[in-house]
Length: 218
Image (cartoon, rainbow, N blue to C red):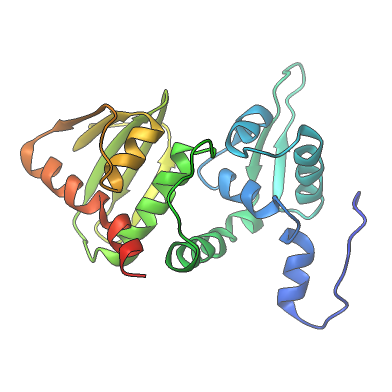
């Protein structure tokens, strides 16, 4: 390994796991790779506040640990980073930390604080999945700040993926991240466009605000 690992010297699987993913920024890098492969610039854009040097170091460490893999195609300038199967296995860990944070560490985005649509939609999707008790199929296409996301339910679980849906969506939402945050938490004032048939739109409006409901009861 290329890093100087600080070990706990404990016979404990949690300690061994934290030796690999417990450094500052590591789990956030993993969070941002859970929805698909990313370039270095993509990760910099999502990880507001990280330096290029620190991100490079974390990516090398996660590669060495077998958690991240880098696609360095000969002749191509861009390097694409993605999770290995071991990295993808951390998805439930990231979700559990997010759910804990929603219930115990929540606050509304502060002025000037980086707000990325993917992080907002991850929180909203998780709140719907765990708190709404809604098990009907759905496909919502979000166009936020020039990026596409799909929030969908297969009738068993809600999920978030980056990219436009391959087929038609029940509801399409076009907005900025700030406008979407305001809409979700009942603070309107910025433009947000919602299209779709009346019943899917009504259901969307009801479910997407479950995040604010969860927050208000914790």
